[in-house]
Length: 162
Image 1: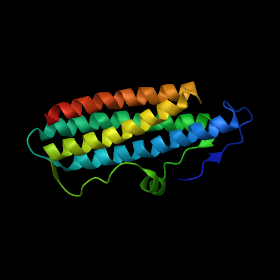
Image 2: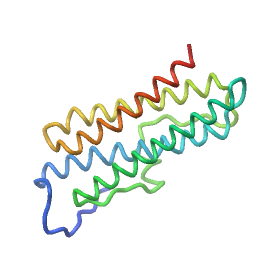
Image 3: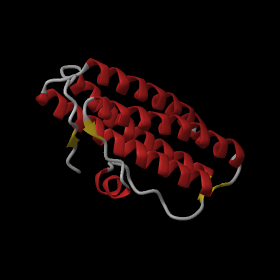
């Protein structure tokens, strides 16, 4: 994982130890969110089959949520005085998400792959939530909100797998 760059802010919101742990947790979720957005775009472009249009449009809705979440997480890292790292090389090296299959995917495979990626991202967020409670309530709250939105999308994706 890339080393976070500390700012020259004169007024730190958190103590140094809490700041380092908090921003590391946020950074690991940032790379997952960026990767998730890219994975969802790949799925969006390459889905085929019955109900193509509804899944295609649903993926755009999820992408919008994920892009907003990644921006919110990156800005929280900045707020805490550390430079977020969303470079493609960092995302490729650090993301917990499995690689998305190459080429066209039938709707059923798309739904399964998207649900798996959402679940991996949610698990990482929930792990961070469990740790952030003792470090920074504001960052914990942010991750709770992000997870809640992704969990709703997961429900809607999984409902189509049945």
